[in-house]
Image (cartoon, rainbow, N blue to C red; front, side, top):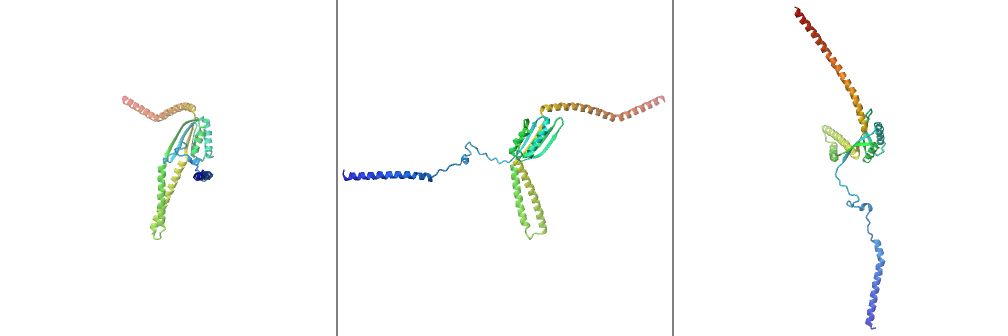
Length: 281
């Protein structure tokens, strides 16, 4: 083998060894690179986008609704008082959340009834209505909502204007060069603004109360069968009342016409005597 071929074979072996060493170095460094470069993971809670079928974001309509519920419940008359009392106790004890009884009325007799009006947090509305109509017939239920967004905004703007004017007047009141008349005028205006501001704050509190809670009016009435029976009984009572009223009317009419009849009788007697006296003469 000549020198040229030997030299070429050595160079080829050196090149092959260099390539193998490079491959081994790359293999030894790859785990370190994998540890250094980490792929960020998306949080499970925030990974879902509004358009991903999970939970679509609700559009903001800019409304502030005050809800009112009207519920009419029919049940046997003997149970109305106890059921109304049970609902009242559940509200007062806060069984279904913050609740306040605004009014209650009951009536007995042949056609008993009860009405209960409460203001309760939204999550307790259905539970309270379910308690009121437990095992009974919910004859009617209606829901109404009033949008208070405009009223709340106007009231907020009014409060801001009054507070700014109040602050400016207080700055003027601190001046030393004011006359007594000016001081009296400023004091009167400041008191007026404070009164208006207090009224606006009370109105804002009432608006917030109507938005954060809901008004529920529960009407307890007898069943239709008992109502029809009661109507028949009332009809019989009306018959007696009508007869009694008619007799009373006739008695009053007789009492009113009796003096007139007496006067007419006396006149007829007098006229007859006069005629008889003329005939004899």
